[in-house]
Every structure is written in C-alpha cells, then in structure tokens.
Amino acid sequence: MAVPKKKISKGVSRTRKKAWTRDCVTKLRNLVQLVQDKETGDFHLNHHVNPVTGKYNGRQVLDMSKDLNNITKIKA
Image (cartoon, rainbow, N blue to C red; front, side):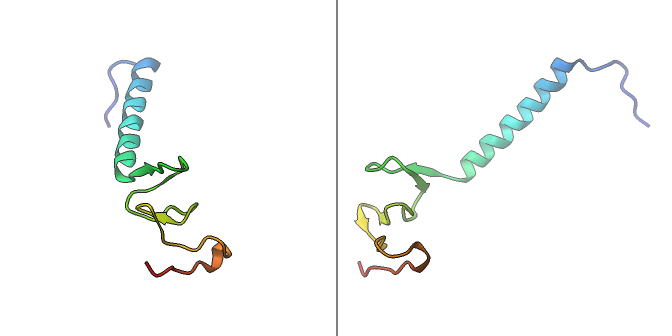
C-alpha cells in the first residue's frame, strides 16, 4: 500500500484542489456559450431564441403575449 513520505500541508492541498476546480469551471464555461442581449441585457444561449423577449437575430420569432406553456411560432 502506498503511504506518503511526508505530510502534505494545507496550502499545497488547497492549491491543488483550487486549480482542479478552476480547470473544471473554465471547461464548463467554454462548453456553454452564453450571449448577452443587446436590447435587454439578458443572457441566453448562443444561436437560440431569447426566452424572455422571444426574439432571435433582431426579429420577433415567438409570440410572448400568450401563456409561456402554450408558446406558438410566428411565421417569419
């Protein structure tokens, strides 16, 4: 069985843990691309309809006046 030769200090173990966490967070951040809407400032997925306004690429795509559970598409 492998046994460490010396005790690992708290700082070293915390630094290693933080570096691993930071690496995972950056990978997740690069995986999900969020874009800020120019008009409202809300964040939404890149190349997707903004769920708050119902707009995509400056055009109204979803009719937001109706209930959110029954969203219908507008012919564009």
